[in-house]
Length: 235
Image 1 (cartoon, rainbow, N blue to C red):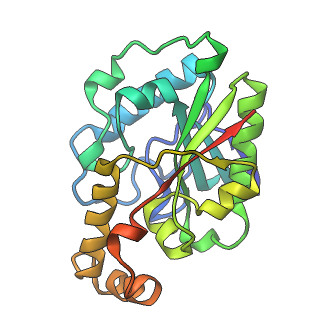
Image 2 (image 1 turned 180 degrees about the horizontal axis):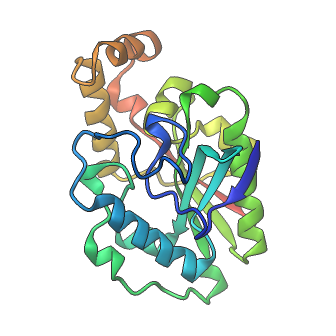
């Protein structure tokens, strides 16, 4: 397994939810994605390429030969402060205004903060320590490129829940030297997570997901398990 920073040789403009991706299949597999917006992947590609040009990278990849089997997406905090976006979710798709936005230079060391946007490992490769390896890769890359801190949202310590939201558990981050900040994600973010969990609980995301929810989260208060933690690692 190889852990490396994403560059323009292979821009991962979609996520590995539906299978490991390589240059040979990223354009075609899967053929249909529910809710995909017209031109969404092309906007992703253009935006990510511009971010790579400006900062050197915006992702860490776990590679099994030529296939990406896991990834971390990260961006300057200054960009995340302006936009909330996702390469896969059509409800938070990268918009044309983001493709054309002026990317800040961020020369002030105090503002050179990276935010981890999501971590995803394909289900066939989970349980092998790839989340830890990817986090190590991000921290090493950030140091080498003179970022002063890395921030993220951490999920409650529930492995299944973390895998659904693409955010590692709090204890995973703590093992890597992150510390809990005083603030938690906004009420808007908590509402989004609670809405997703409600759909899973009520069977709107399929019978299998409902069964998994009952197994790993049954009886727990939705508001409690939808509360994530802000974490930060100084470099």
